[in-house]
Length: 376
Image: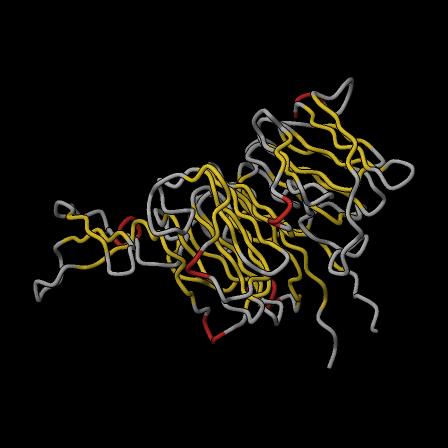
C-alpha cells in the first residue's frame, strides 16, 4: 500500500478569542489558512471560544479563551462548559478527565474515571488525522455530556460506532449503519417528522434499510452520509444550512408579506410569502423534520460531513470540500462573509492542488486536513 502523503491542517472562520486559525489576524479568517508550522496535529476539536489540538505525539494544546497544554493524551473534546481529555495509561485502560476550560489543564480535574476501550477499529489507525471519537467513550457503551452527569451510559444493544452532540440533541450511528436521535426536537433536528423531544435514543425510521457511514450534528440540524455517498439532512434551515431555500437569504431588504405557515406532505415546514408576478407564493423551508436527500453539484459522492452552529461542510470521495449555510465570519471558506443555501465548492483546495481528507467544524469556524494530490 502506498504511504500516505504528508498533509496539513487549515482553519477559517471566527477567531475573536485568538484561537488558532492559521496566519489570519483579527476576528475572522475568510479563506483557508495553514495552521502554525511545527505542530504535528492529528485531531482537532473546536468550541466557540477555544480550540483543542491533539498531536501525533500525544500532546493536547489549547488555543483561544482557554490556554494550556498536557502530554500523554489520546483524544480531546472541547465545549464551552468543559474540556474532556482521554489520557493514556499503562495497560488496556485509559483515563477520562473532565476539566474546566479555564483551568489550563493544571491542578485537579472536575471529574475523572478509568475506561476500558474496545479493540482499536480498523478505520481508526493511530495517528491518522481526524476529528476524534469523543464524546463517545472508547468503551462505546457511554458518552460524555457537557452538563452533569458527565458520564451517560448507553444501552448495550445500541452498539454505538459514532456519537455527535448538537446544542440540544444527540445523534448515534450504530455498528449496522442505523441512526438514532434523542434530545430536543423543536427545530426538527431529530428527524422523526415532529418537533417533539425524545428522552431516549429513537431509531430514524425514515432511514431504515439505508446503511449510513457517518453522522454530524449542528446546533439545531443534522446530517448523515450513506456508505454509497448520499447525503441526508434535516432540522433547522434558518441560514440555509440544509441547502434548502431560506427566506433570510432571499430577501433583498424589501418588506415581505405576512407569513402563512403550513406543512408539506413530507412534513417539512414551509413559510410562504407573496411575491411572484403570477401570484404564486414562493416557498421557503424553515424546518425540515424528516431526512431529505441532498445532491451535491456534479453528482459528487460524499464521504465525510461536519456541522457548525448553522453551517455545513462535506468532503467528497475525490477530496473536494463543499460548504454552505451561515457565513458571517468566513466559516464557509469562500473569501467572503456571504451565507449560502446551496453547496459551493471551496476553490482554495482545488487551486492549491490539495485533496481534503477530513473536516471538523466549530460553532463559527471550520478546520480542514488536506494532502497534496499525487501526480498522475
